[in-house]
Image 1 (tube, rainbow, N blue to C red):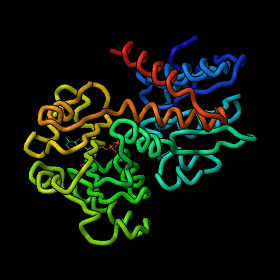
Image 2: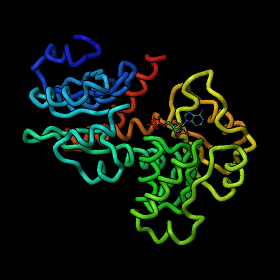
Image 3: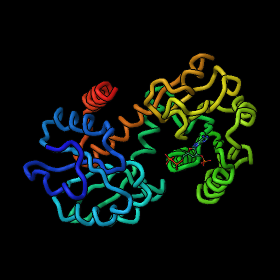
Length: 305
Ligand code: ATR
């Protein structure tokens, strides 16, 4: 069986067991098959879970094509999560509120779009740091797709404080406007300081972190070895919890800097696990075998190095 399918080769997929998969572009590095298949195996469910690479301009046609095929459900990763919102038949509240779809259930001939990224992140923070997002003062670095989703989730959780830092401040300010008008939270709106947009630079961040518990990187800075330093040590403090949604390389430069000054750190692998387990539960209709999925994910990660 091919490792990565495309719209042209999808018809080669076997009909012998329920089909699941992950769509994206690129998708060949996705760790989801290892994790999801470990879950199915542990639960004694026979299933396929494949990678499907779809160029952005082929997304609409491919979703239509998949509707005619026996897909039981699938995940969606970059860059299709936002576009997919308009292509599914029904949107659940999670997808509506986060503005993106990462999980689809094929139910009675309809594609139902969910989003498990936000809840997956909340569970990851709880597991990694033994704290709840709602009790934290949070600084989100980045206001792109991932930053928007996590900021919306944090606001929905009515976290204690939310600061959004972005290189282009306009995007952070726009997100802030949206959150203050759509998220009705006394806690968040009590003072202007509870919800704030700042530029993503060392001075602006250094001025905020005294009133922050959790820093979350959602920018793409750190993915490549040649990337610039996102924040210098002087912008961080030892009391911080620092979470980088990037899990490769591990640690990222940001996490290394944070560790060096004594902050606690964790990376996006835990978020990948928990969003995946929540997707699995939507498809299987029962509790996910979390430890088996964790092991499957770790194995896939180790093999990818
Ligand atoms: P994603 O959907 O993964 O969040 P994206 O929407 O392209 O990807 O967003 C990328 C994020 O990384 C943005 O917040 C971007 O900042 P800008 O909005 O200013 O472009 C941020 N980013 C990318 N390169 C950066 C860099 N060199 N320094 C700081 N931020 C950067």
